[in-house]
Length: 263
Image (tube, rainbow, N blue to C red; front, top):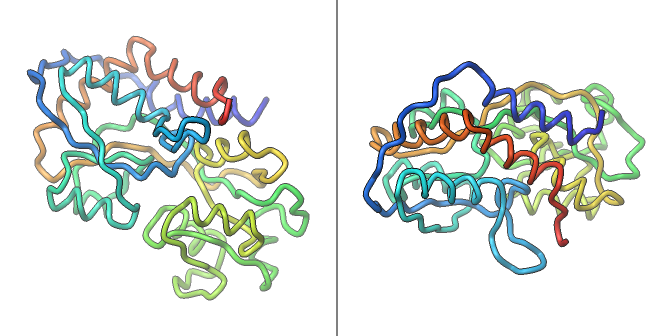
């Protein structure tokens, strides 16, 4: 089975769970400001051909906007500032493949999951020194790139290395995209990423990157909102309706199987 098919199956797992589609409310043209990072292909990223932001989440939000009768505008922000900014009410919601976690629920409300993915090891295409977490950890010369506070960071700390968050083998970067460039340039040897983003980079750069090893657990993605937001219910209704009528499945096929970056 091709890797893209495996990841597509993982993505579908969260949306194929038994759930009744709810009635989708009409929000009367309400303006909703969505903040994102544009650095997480194929969920959201800058099209190298057009320079425009595109991706799975943009298509999903366009469909949600039609169903809920809302007007969506977008703002851009770095990952480390996103959850605090949404928590403080600077934006109505945020999207960037955000893993649903209990510690984050203390700051923001989540939608129901719209996608499920698994954590993988992204390495350079010619990497032969390690093939799994144990062999990576056994070589003290190898470095992993990550963003502090992200799921990949904690996976690196607690599942690959020794549990020390200050381990000098972890090199921190401001954005996921910068960590990918560090991997490309040989500044680090591994970037942990969910299969969604990792597969996007491999498909776009098959001579540069590959995924190795077994998946390191499952994570669900959701949109985030300020605590108590009245948008959560309508968004959940739209997600449920899109799962029920096959729209989410169609988006998965488009972005994980059919789309070629730069084409």
